[in-house]
Length: 84
Image 1: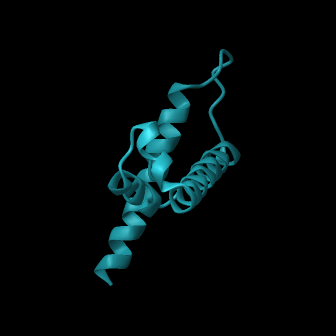
Image 2 (image 1 turned 180 degrees about the vertical axis):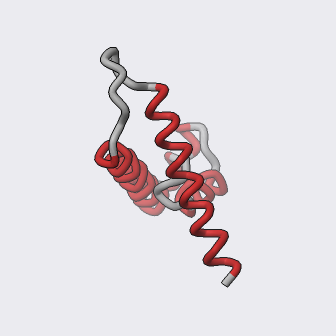
């Protein structure tokens, strides 16, 4: 039960932080970002991590060329989409 609560509170905290970060990047009209932009950012992160996993699996020798180690890649891939 504690794990679920920690995960839910972590998720809620990540949503709050993402919305605050997006509010700081608000356009000149000062519009507040919505749920759509939040979900879009999460989708981009998930897509990036999927691509990174594919690259690490298919061409592991190129991971060092972009300045990462396989440990860095595993750490990044393990993150949920709402984590930066």
